[in-house]
Length: 285
Image 1 (spheres, helix red, strand yellow):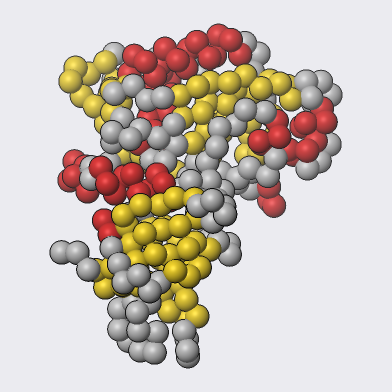
Image 2 (cartoon, rainbow, N blue to C red):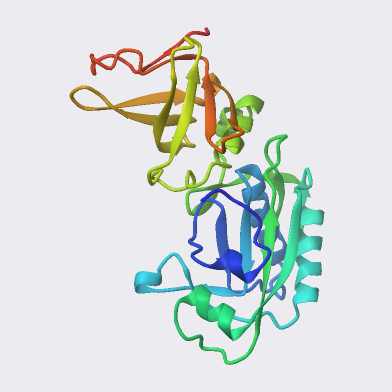
């Protein structure tokens, strides 16, 4: 699903670990490196397409794998919010936009989220850290030694990809710094369901430079690594796919009818009779 801030128990129902959602049972601030870990987690979402870190939850097992399986109530939520805020403010550049929110879950709320009788018989408290995508590019995080001492002028660049966080290599930085491609990635991820591997039946209205294409097309996936949007069309004899680089997507918007639209600088599915030919041809060099 497209990311939106988690602000209540209702927003947690059906949540899976995805590109835009993760959880932590707790952050142990007795460990001197935890402040840098918090900063890394927030920066990773800010450098991607935004997301939420839910503090006070455990992953489930079996059929609940990848979903919240149990809650670990936060005992001092106000103090946790303060520590998270300090950790991010002191260890990231530029500062990302984020908002920690304290959420109280009744027993009935827990039942709806867990889809079973909860272990707790009383209210539990969790903290949702909602992180907006940073339009300017990457958010860097300070690097520390094992004792928590800051290493002067040392930074790393975490980014969320799929269901995990990794740090970009120096040679990768230039690949992710194109402002237009970043804008397109953020806009595409506002469309419901596109943060999953499959579009799950998602369709968008496609416009291209020929003026001939004004049809709904199926979204197969967004390839973040290679910066490609993959669309699908049932051709005359077989299913066709078109790989459209972010660089050739001019903009993404939602029209007055509620449909998501994409304008592409090129010709898409221009020759469906010949599956051997590329189904996207750029019209801009």
